[in-house]
Image 1 (cartoon, rainbow, N blue to C red):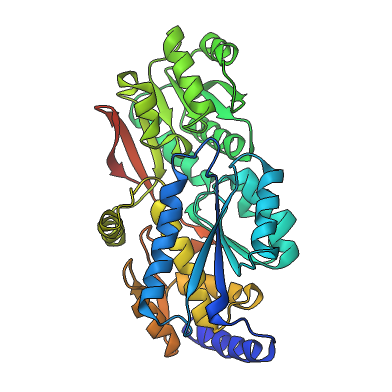
Image 2: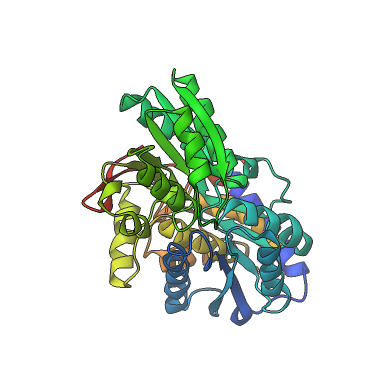
Length: 397
């Protein structure tokens, strides 16, 4: 493995020297495309701030290939693939970004990758697109993600439900790639541990009334309602309608439902609900939380993953000596994994220096990064309980 890293470095140095014109480091831009409007709009400002923390840390070091990096924000909307693709096209053709940190939701991420990133040869690293379909999608080596696949989240959810004694569940999912993939994973895994799924039905975001959807869920029954949706729109609507009608008073909430805005909107009736989202109790997570608190950034879901996604882009560029996605894409997996010096949040200057001097790094970051398969996180999860009107982490898996 060590020899492979060295051979790859030599090859990339040669390719980088041959490909002209080289992009000046001072011109390096990273697009930050997230749903600043839409069903997870309460989460994305902190996610963007996490990515910008990495950029600011690198710029402060003055060690990135002799120049600075600029983050350029764009709105994915989370759910409108056409709007997201247009926004990504503007990032690449007008803003001239060298890579993209994003997108966030799985459907728009898929659309941007297939319609824009692949056509333009631009690397994308998503902090939160978790659809299992993204594990096998054709990507020309351009797509990576610092959040694990929902194939893994389904296993975690099923284990929690079984441990808590739930024998039957109803599932309501947002009608898109993320919701369908997650709901199917939960159903498959819960059945595999002996559980019963009474109904697995979709809901649309942006509706004013979810009475019909909840009536169907109530008729099917189940010990607990799993809401695989979004906390600022449809998922919230399903929960409120279920509470208002008395259909359900107990909920399991996967990652798209985890965030401060949900218990604030629902109130004390949400107390006792449980949930899951990517998370780790690693030393890097503790360090990132300390840094984020100092920067007045809330460490909500996918914020460490956003810092890590931006950091991996930058470190892959530094490792390859190039800012062209076609060159540095092959370095993402190598800077993310063993062998090499472990790199934690706040140590990007150290990493840049090691890479500049020809050394190897193993980027751990704030989310315990380990990229597997085609370039996705191996997967660590935090378990949540709503208590006192707020999400509280009760453990890790």
